Amino acid sequence: MTVPCVRVPRERGEAARKRIAELDALSGTYEIEVVDGDIYIPLDESADLDALVSEFDVVDRDVDRRETQTLPADILGFEPSYERLGDIAIIDEDDDERARGIAEAIADSDLPLDTVVNRASPIEGELRIRNWDLLVGDSTETVHREYGCEFEVDIAEMYFSPRLATERRRVVKQVEDGEQFFDMFAGVGPFVIPAAKQGAECVGTDLNEAAIEYLRRNAERNNVAERVTAIHGDVREISGYDDWADRLVMNLPHSADEFLETAVELAGDDCVLHYYDIQHESDPFGPGERAIREAAAPDYEVTVQTKHEVRSYAPHELNVCLDVRFRR
Ligand code: SAM
Image (tube, rainbow, N blue to C red; front, side):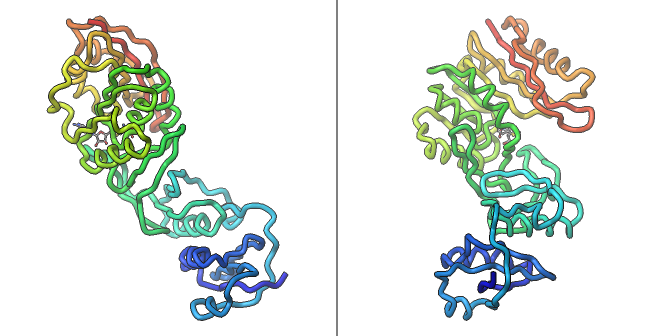
């Protein structure tokens, strides 16, 4: 079927598609095509062609009727690997050209993804942030939805991993109405916000001021601001919460052991600790359990309730969680 299409070079495809969508001129009936470095974007019957011609190269072209959603694999000819966070697609490609090709295909597909970023560094530093190459789009900020909660997050400014959604759900399901919940490394609040929604009185601390600002916004956004206290700073220097917590979350896996003294200070008479760790597969729980027992003695009786494998972290390394009960 011959229809009017905007023709643009591939690298300008996403910007053009967005502009055409803004003008309400994007066809939902015909497939976008990529031929010899150009993208052909079919226009809707109702499109104002005169207005479009002044902005774009409009040509008549024989294009296929859309049968299903166009996915990145349809454009690329192979299945790319990417992770979704709100409207951001996150890829992990060493080869820049391959990364650009995947990014363009994601942008040209029917997926509701406006931004594509490639990992440009490991997660680094105390704030646990990584660098990104922004390949499509103009912002690293998005809104991620998880089990009925919404999280505003800027991945260039703060840590966030959508991969931990199931694990967070596992922990939050244990939260009881009215309990005092303390997240020592709260980030934008993916534990705090759902815990507050379950009726807990929550405190979240983080060294990253931007993350704390987003945690406050997320508390408002999810209508739990009255049950959330967000504190910027080093959790070891926070005062006013000694013996306070019924539940503690420690998600700083590489160095949580350095914060166990603080955890013991924050723990109430009967407190459950969710302690995240990354260890060799030969003994993934041993080092954490020994460190916890040492820190809790002699004030608390310690019971390990669950030894849970969260995910594989690297070859032979596991990300694990120990759920531990402290009784004074
Ligand atoms: N709990 C959040 C989540 O699951 O998305 C964030 C976890 S992230 C692995 C660890 C967080 O700990 C980072 O946001 C970092 O800024 C924060 N952090 C690191 N050192 C800290 C400290 N001494 N006191 C408070 N927060 C700290």
